[in-house]
Image (cartoon, rainbow, N blue to C red; front, side, top):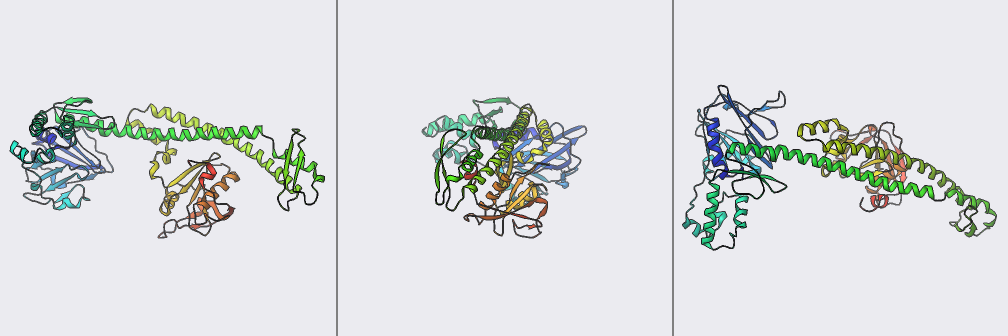
Amino acid sequence: MHLNYHFLRYLCPALKSEFTGKTILACFSQNKNELIIEAAHGSEVSYLKAHLDPPQVFLSFPKDFKRAKHHSINHFKELIGDRINDCQVLPFERAFFFKFDSGKLLLFKLHGNRSNVLLYDVDALAPIKLFRNELIEDKSLDWTTLGKELDVSFEEFKRLDGNAAKFLPTLGQIPRNWLKSKGYLEADLDGKWELMQELIDSLESPLFTIATNGSEVYLSLLPDPNPISSFSNPIQAANELFYLAFIKGNFEREKSSLLKKYQDQLKRHQAYLEKSSQKLQELQESSPPSELADVIMANLHQFLPGVTELELQNFYSGETIKVQLKPNQKPQDLAATLYRKSKNRKLEWDQLGKNIESKRIQAGQIEAKIMLLEEVKDYKSLKSFIKSHGEDKVLQKEVEVLPFKIFEFEGHTIWVGKSAQSNDEMLRNFSKKDDLWLHARMVAGSHVLIKKAINQSLPALVLETAAQLAAYYSKNKTESLAPVIYTPVKFVRKVKGSHPGSVVVEKESVILVKPTSPEEIFGKGS
């Protein structure tokens, strides 16, 4: 109800007492859609802060305010040196104004997302300046048309058949909910009138309650089941609401959001560790392919011309095993393939162990960050935390606005652009010169990046996986094999004026891969 007429009718007399006789020293902003007014009489200084950045619209009245030396913009220069002589609320309207000795009028229109501050010259019906210039309809707003005279008699109530919204359109959501909770909709006309009078009596009692419904902090003029604090002074109530709902509320939301992202990242690391540790255990416990190759080579004499299938005894385990050759495949070639797989298996074993250790260290680092973040108690400390963890700037952005998909594979991070525009944004704002850039050759498709740490080697399997994704997210998606080019980001540049997603590549290598979906590579839920 802090933007409601029923609160403003109490706030304006308090502002009149606080500001009348004081001269405007400054009108400026140093944050988007936030206007600060400084007024003084002798040594007495008063401030008004109007935060009009939707959807968070608040008024507050700080005891002191330090203007930043940089990044502040002056507004309403016509008012500097002018003296305030009145403050009035417009009848039954979410608006009030300050009147000046010069005859000028500064109107505060508190219409939710369309809130604005408008300056009117002497006797002018249209504003000469707006604070929020993007609200074009305000440029012709006649402030004298805003106020309303309402008939609040029983006869008018009866004529409207007890329709609360038409009888008193200034009520707002909280009073309407109060009426509903009292059985207003089911009551007869006399019962509705009785409830309406009870409500009006409450609205005319100057007691302002700050309350919460769990997810939102709000101001109410009615008794509330979840009160935080109560005030008889409307300026104090407005200040407390601004602190709890805006300053503290934004801090808690930002901290919770960042904490959740770290926790989600930790879960991904833990899932990778569990899956990779299981895979490593399977590699360590299973027989190497070279054992089968040894059995084949020891029994070459049994592979007579035309024989494609034999049952042989595995002299390592004593078990009988079946060996099948592909058409026209020689047993020596199958053995060579198995020896190569065994060698690659050892490389995969070593790499997987390194990746697990690296991931375990990263998980420990994230756990340490979570512990530090949980100890942050105010916005200043949160800003310091964010600044000191600048390497996490991608994480700190809202996931919904990131212009790429994120995949983790073998300890490496792979990004895939979501559109032509996001390809440009990913390359321009998120890439580093040593990241590896991939793209399907000669066809439209997503840009793909393999994020590389300094001096980090890139396993062939990671390159192949990223290339498979680049092929899958391209017009070569349905091909059995597709060429993909790759090169460090430093060799990829955007030509000014070119189409979104279009780049020039100065050096490139080519890899031929099968287009493969994330589901096939990483499993369901990727």
